[in-house]
Length: 296
Image 1 (cartoon, rainbow, N blue to C red):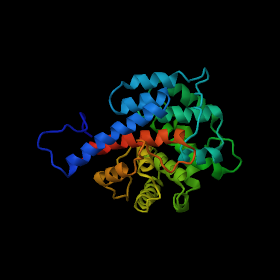
Image 2 (image 1 turned 180 degrees about the horizontal axis):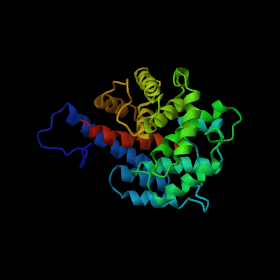
Image 3 (image 1 turned 135 degrees about the vertical axis):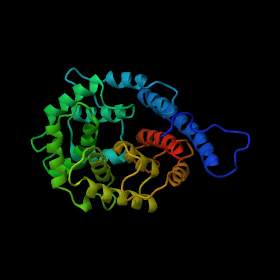
Image 4 (image 1 turned 45 degrees about the horizontal axis):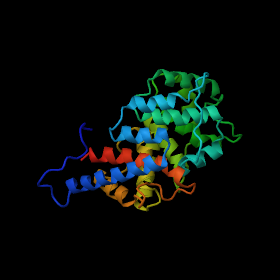
């Protein structure tokens, strides 16, 4: 992906085509940024500025690390969460420290490699909180721990300080329970968890799982069951441009993303928990739009 401005208008820009689409995206980014500035907290506003290259990543890192406890865990953020995470967390029942680490590592991963000293301390905390079967969380049923543990595991697999033995135990926990029904039929939290874990941790079932995830990702897009901002959020967690078996083109995704932007500038119109739950999908959309514009 190239560096530099998303789009610089010239005197002879065509009225249609890639340049016009990028111009529309630039206007959309401005409105999305305005939504986060109005409805988000300090951390969300800083994250938006970093995405739009109006602030340095260290500004966000300092805000996140101010929430880290002496034991290495992070304080969980208050307020509503996007439905894709809310469903997983409700079934998952993580401790406050595990949930705080999940949220903090998710935000820190946007800034670059998970190699900070604060990440190492969080990884140490999570190692002490990991269950014997490799999962995380307090739910009695293993299935209830699956999506949340996979989402967290995808982040741990991207950390330079992750412990291999812990990742192997978690990999076995997830792989032993794998079947295509885990990602079929609209279970977005499970789709996001399996896609992010197996994109970042390679084992014998990775290709099979990612093929299924890619097909389901495209099916969700084609049927409009999956909002484009959520789809792009999943790809960001996977740290990939597209999943195997998915044939979605950047321009197609960008067109749909702009179409789904609400009149107030935000994304996440299907979120049921109110405006606060729309902040994260809007940040996914901003980040996704920047990446898509630079890919064609």
